[in-house]
Image 1 (cartoon, one colour):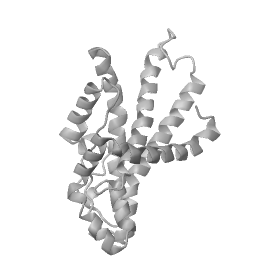
Image 2 (cartoon, one colour):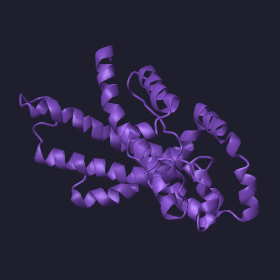
Image 3 (cartoon, one colour):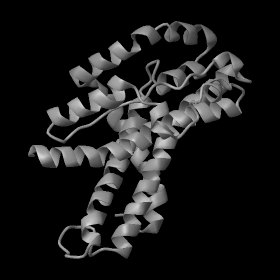
Image 4 (cartoon, helix red, strand yellow):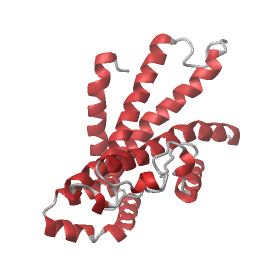
Length: 232
């Protein structure tokens, strides 16, 4: 892929990624606020403005480096974690699981919405979803289709990745909430080392053994919504 096409693809991919990580973090903060913790709201983190959630390294530099290094085949990024004070929650053990699940659930919803829009485009405008037509729309619709495709794949991936049961990922926090107190406390002590554990799992390929089944389950859930509307 030449540099011009690479930059164009990066621009197309950036929009659904910003949507995914922004809505993910807002979902955490919004649910926490409803369950008794106003921390995110008081710090202005319930905004859908991506600038409120951008982390210079994880939101900008990392995705660009990964996208260029993989020649446009892989991209991943994350936003600044939304602040949650679990002590303010009405039922800390139960509500922390709900708050943690809110982010991945939001990504699944975004994936479903992206698929619905793709289905509508392919059914209503089947002759302009590729660049084979001379119509003006044929220059607009293909990039939109590509953005929606990125939206589907990235939202499914980020939901599955965050559901890996290792703290501080959402899956780890959910697991802690479901464990008996003693086991939950011992497991929570992994949190300072959780990211390093995930990196080791990723570099050794073991993370895929965990992520693929989660992705498969998410795709199955999405198919339950999509199949009645004709699917792909």
